[in-house]
Length: 257
Length: 257
Image (tube, rainbow over the protein chains, first blue to last red):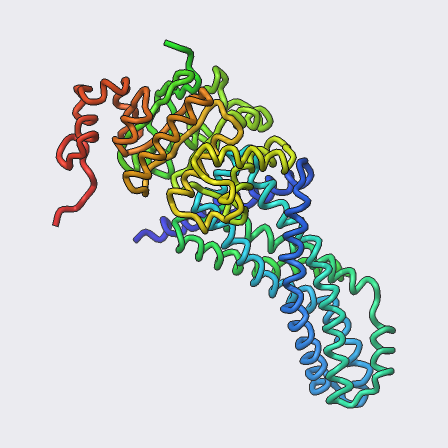
């Protein structure tokens, strides 16, 4: 086996995939701003992507906030831990853990669902059928999902922030015997509007990644049930990795100074 | 000869190294029913998808009403697409929508018709394919294969298209239901005065719905003539196909044990 042939094939396949994805994103984004708009479908997707993800995201945030509080307490200097725990939990949740863990949980839930649904529509020719009924599949299927995810992810993460901080509060006051009033005061003193906003900005980007990856892999699935399964896996894996990568990039940009 | 409604000139398409369409030349005269016969994997479906614009051919020209659809911008193309109706092989009904909304889809989304009015038309079209109004409230998954095909037919004719494509309309149906579908195709087409292009390998269907017949083999049209001429075409490929013989010039890629 020729090593160069293998390298060449992998590079070409990767470039083709990047090209296809870029084209897909461009088509989808351009359709967001061109009528007709499918409001009812967008609202439906907001319900599915946002509202039904609430329990998963809330539980994730609660336990993460609690675990974070414990770790800081055990690891830190226990003398001034009372002020440190509240501050670090608040900053950690709003800046990083809320958006990233929320994003990852929704990626697992929503990217997979989107890829499976659109993938099945692809292999049963339902997407082609849309075209023959004078309806652009990008506009009808992709745009409502992308718009819904970009709007609802920040809302979800905002809820996650609150519940995550509450998780830290419950553990600190419950099992670490912190003073509740002091904890709340410390949180309020150190938490700034910008911290929350940076997390919500990230969340919007993650929402875009989640919806686009689900749609892209669903649209391009082929070969029956197995193909749809592969599309679902690929959607979740690529969405998760892109979320982590995008998070790093955005952290380095948002907090550069 | 009457004027051409659809004309394909020297259309080529390949996927990777696999040549699927190798210079297709085909004319569908206005108001007539052309049936393209050919074995599995000979490029029949790809040909229809090229005309619909779902697949873009590598080279060649496709004319609808004398205009080259491959040189059109998106807006013009969408206008041309409104002339088309299509019945898919697996019916390709939208399983998230009830039957009547499937039938009315092109009217509501493509033509911005009021839902109430579109529903009336949908029920009328369902009656035309022999389905009661109550069926309209069911979901596609609740229907048998034959009923799904009939709903697909109702959807294809809902917007009174000038051109209708049938992709293997009788595949997967029992002989009696297949004949019912053939009758419905003939009737509905006669009512609309539409031009139709069908692909099938069911000779019973060919004898019933075709005015003209063309045979595709290895991405080329190798024979074309009227329905009456099929049985004494003098073409050994056609003879082998219509009599369903394993021996002949068409060799299936089957490994003998």
